[in-house]
Length: 355
Ligand SMILES: CC(=O)N[C@H]1[C@@H](OP(=O)(O)OP(=O)(O)OC[C@H]2O[C@@H](n3ccc(=O)[nH]c3=O)[C@H](O)[C@@H]2O)O[C@H](CO)[C@@H](O)[C@@H]1O
Image (tube, rainbow, N blue to C red; front, side, top):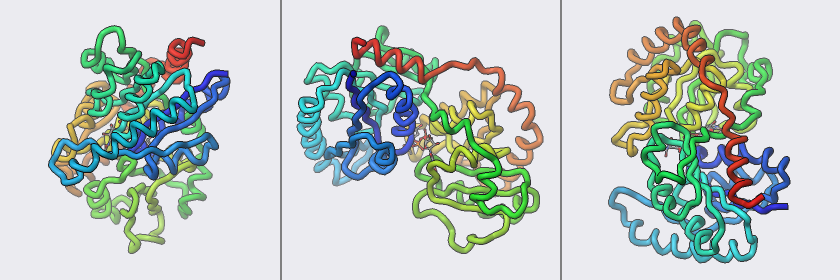
């Protein structure tokens, strides 16, 4: 039996690809442990899979001024020594890192303990944590062909992003029951990334009466971002975050409005869901979602609405436009090659673990 440590956290996008690998790792007889932060979203998401979870101290790597920039390096140093101890205790054959700031001390500890390291980058341009970790890595997996040019030759492998198999096995009727929709109508789903998106939530709420004339609306708002006044509105269901019912809600949805996080858009493509992407703006990020979204738009998989142009009017007209051409979006998404990211990554893991 081989021994693997998975790491990744900070937002769900740095955790769900690790979850997607769990069944395959089990089938291939790996003993799996997870290292994340003491109390990040990764802890809550991983706990229910019954694999040992080890929390370490972690600090955020910020690109802007914050007083925490002076204390967080100390937390990272503490996390590093905790991670070195875990490497010595767990003796993994390989480390798989999905990125996010918590992974930096883990990857550096694995390097010190001579554990082979595989990194996965979901976005088109590598994030800061992965850029710091790349020199220590044996291989760096990526999701977009464009990313290969940003990575060292010889390390970069185009694998795609692993998607949880169960997402493809949802049940429409279960979602209708779960959302308590009074009738089975066409459904619009809004999902603002793993943290929700206040600007999207506001634009959607402004046009809700209009949308509810024709559609059921299921709205995943993000933690603390639901609107109690809208509870009980017929045809409308809102949630903070959805775990196992997500597959059913996807099955029910005829049109999805989403942020352009790399995992979310790959899921939409696999599920062939006509979609409108509203990428996180450059003001709030390094602009990776904008690149993700425009790549999908160029390929005919998505329509894009930039946050700067987001108003209730532009959103409503985009919805009408994409809904009217939904069949042509589905046709485009059906022509993509059916790569198998999970298998490619599992094979790479076996190669690096010396199996
Ligand atoms: C603010 C931020 O840093 N965003 C980044 C983060 O986004 P974020 O964490 O939002 O990442 P993604 O959109 O890539 O993935 C979100 C994941 O959470 C799942 N999900 C979401 C909501 C929910 O209720 N239930 C659920 O299961 C989705 O199905 C998906 O698997 O990581 C992505 C991948 O590196 C980046 O592209 C994003 O720019």
